[in-house]
Length: 223
Image 1 (spheres, rainbow, N blue to C red):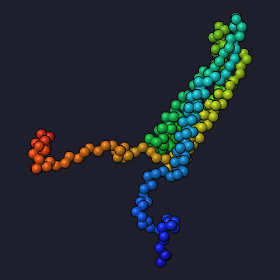
Image 2 (image 1 turned 90 degrees about the horizontal axis):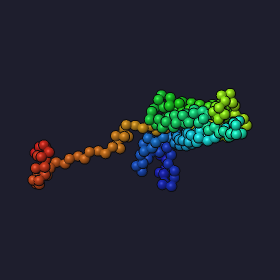
Image 3 (image 1 turned 60 degrees about the vertical axis):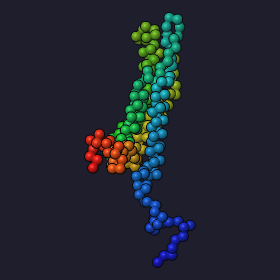
């Protein structure tokens, strides 16, 4: 028979608990690795979506158009070049929130949608990084010549910021795909548990006639 353990000695998992600590207290908590991957996915997904929306509003390309008065400066924003990054950023945000509303196969599908949103942003931004179609169209409008093309074309670094944004969303989606099973989900059981419970009516006191009359007015039998 092993000697009794003192309070200073650490307790092993095989020893019975004598201090009344419930082992099931942390049963509903996600594993530590699940909490870390959850926090990382939330931060990466939100940051990626915000960066993609910001990049879409910035200037992606500059150039000039030849007009009667000289060279006319032209600027194309990310939304002028392609609307895909902004649209997929919103889809990614919705998918990131929806991950917690579904379970099992539904969670996997939503996680894949989140990852594919990131892939779509990366591809669209890379294709738009060297695109001149938006400025060519503006040059034709400024000069009144449908065949006019932009001159002095240059690009900024914002398309590659959109690429980085898509990569962040992609990583968030991959975390949801491979670690989402360890994440918590919304449950109707918890919603019911958090709802206020109706107050139970106590039986009227026979020694207090006013309570008996109130019970009769409510249609209750005071007996």
